[in-house]
Amino acid sequence: MSNLDYETLEKELVYKRKNGFRTMSDKEIKIAFDFAEKYKDYLNSSKTEREAVKTSVEMAKREGFVEWESEKTYKEGDKIYFVNRNKAVILVKFGKLGLEKGVNISVAHVDCPRLDLKPNPVYENESLVYFDTHYYGGIKKYQWVTLPLALHGIVVKQNGEKVEICVGENPDEPVFYITDLLPHLGAEQMKKSLGEAITGEALNVLVGSACVKDEKISNAVKLNTLKILKDKYGITEGDFMSAELTLVPADKARDIGFDRSLIASYGHDDRVCAYPSLLALFDAKDIERTAIVCLTDKEEIGSMGNTGLESNYLFDFIEDLAVVSGVNPRTVFRNSKCLSADVNAAYDPAFSEVYEKNNSSYINCGLVVTKYTGARGKSGSSDATAEFVGEIRRAFDENDVLWQMGELGKVDIGGGGTVAKYVANRNIDVVDVGVPVLSMHAPCEAVSKIDVYSTYKGILTFFEKIV
Ligand code: MN
Ligand code: MN
Image 1 (tube, rainbow, N blue to C red):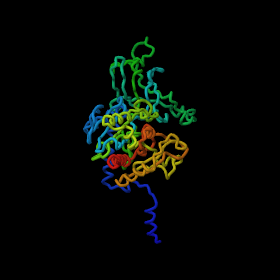
Image 2: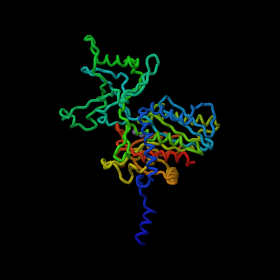
Image 3: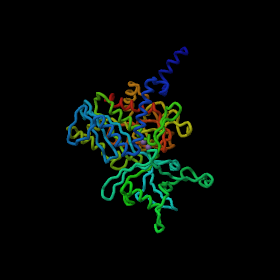
Image 4: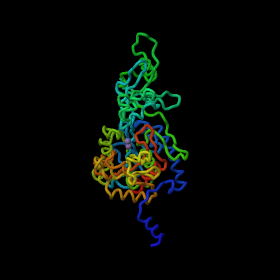
């Protein structure tokens, strides 16, 4: 064989991961960068699951989606949504085929790691007033000190009235803040491990220092803060007991790098799959099978609760659609297919020791398909069948979707879980797909614009081409 023949043979036999900046046209890269601008707007208006649901429903209404009516039968082209307790939403676009042929579902979660306020959060210590927090999801606690934090959420008052609160997002609003020790006095602290230096109980957020002018009041700074809250929101200290208030980084999404190829933001995990899922549903044309997007809650704490996917709300909803159409729900589930759209850990050269190079996902190499998650011997994973992965792979290749395979880190180093196993419980074919993320679960995470766009294109292909 001549050298040239070996080159041909290599091309035919050897798999090479593709980098979008090498393989995509300039025109398509521009489309990906434009897509990122709208994604950044979504991030900035969706810092909690409630806000993500609200933003998503507003977008869906502009696309002609209407609220689900449980007794109604729907036909091809109908577009509906169902909101579950303001924290999760299901959106449906009906296809040509009957539900008995199965549906195509893309699920992403819209909750993120954060600092929730405790039910009795306000206390004063030496003339400073704090909110006591209980963190939500997997965080590295040391990352949350000395950051500008914004307060988001709702308070349900004693009289049942609901008050929405959002402070710290506009430049003219105040932010909140957790202190850290100065290096000059930090010698003992610096001897501790990263996991021990800042404890969960130490995540106390500074919210004020001014007091009311009355010597007889013992907690005059706390009272001053409570007075401000009463004046502004009409709430009392007791109202915190029936509230969901959360502290998140106050920053907006920004580009990273001279080439602006990456996006830095809080909450990419998993809005970076929620937004492409939504846009793919909006843009999907002439679909054979009914397409469903579910933006769910509570993934970061194990999908528990009635707004998480361990509950039946998504499956009950599909059952309800089936029953009014006279279709056996189990037939629908058996024939359905699902992308569990969630992030994966991008290979990080700065921490190469925890990754296995050949089986990691890489920045700018597109949507990552993850056949199985889990820890140790794939424990807790829904391992997708080779047949289903093969079907997805073929569709992606035929439709020029930039994609790659990836595991989360080296075997026995750690692992993770997604909602895939809860979908699989209903005998639905499911595989994990998503965007590779740098610094996952940090207050500011990083993703590539090409990967976000490729995820949109992959999900659109799934809706339009997989029958
Ligand atoms: Mn996730
Ligand atoms: Mn996560």
